[in-house]
Amino acid sequence: MDVLALIVMNVILPVFFLIGAGVFLHRKFTFDMNTLSKLNTYFLLPCVGFVNIYESSIGGAILLDTLGFLLLQSVCLITLSTGMAKMANFDQSLSAAFKNSFVLSNSGNFGLPVSQLVFHQNPLGLSIQVVVTIFQNLLTYTYGLMNSVSGQSNGTKVLRELLKNPMIYALLLGLLFNTTAINIPSFIWAPIENSSNAFLAIALVTLGAQSAYLELNRFSLPLVLSLSGRLILSPVIALLLILSLKLEGTTAQALLIASSFPTSRNSAQFALEYGNHPEYAAQAVLMSTVFSSMTVTIVVYGSKMLF
Image (cartoon, rainbow, N blue to C red; front, top):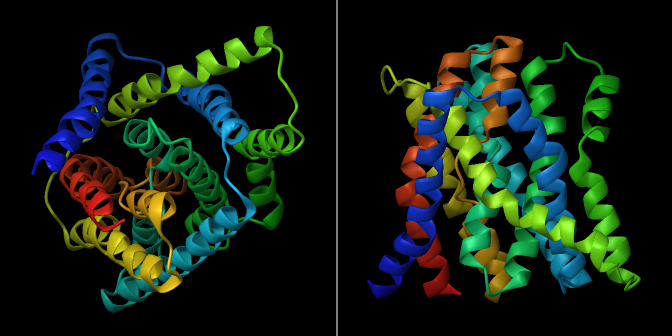
């Protein structure tokens, strides 16, 4: 229980303290959410990605293991959510929102700060989470976007949205500088590193601001299924895949923890943009984030005990 208490004190409470600060500050001062979103997506998140890939010692074998796991996990989640939506007789619009809330996780604003706290003395764990975040971004703007528009958008729009994502370029640049051992001058490195360090606080305050005015009316069947899938079934599937692939150590810990993060905010944004039950989608984001305080704690504790 000492380990569990330490996880709650050192990981979960700091995360939700900053989320709470975001809720309070947004209600008091009304932040410009578009500005905060752009700051995180186009500046701070790429800095985190670049710094951690540049400094990491993640090898080709670990990278392949990570990508293989993520592909298999995504296929399992997509297949399972599609089957559940059909069995529950959801209409096409609700089905799109449900599947996105089930498959897409908040690996950026929530996942990276949690991983920074869990793996603060282990750069490999954080580097794996960076890869997970980039993969989730790719999944969001391919599967998630195509799922939301339900065939009404062409491939050109999807590709354009994908190429606008700066995390892709941060990853490629970090890999290039890492593999070629290029030394970055201190006057350039210092602002990049400082920006990377700022990400944790600003990302969580932003997440709190995004959740400040969300309301829960009732626990509908789609909401219960979304929460069960994202917070319970996803880690269970991840554990089975980790054991099947015989992954161990930090890689296994990082991937199991990454599987437990709450529903991505993008699922609610897509639902709002394309009219796919936006209130339900927003509730899924809010409640999965709230309940993740318990489920992520259990998964972090389990990962430490198992691997």
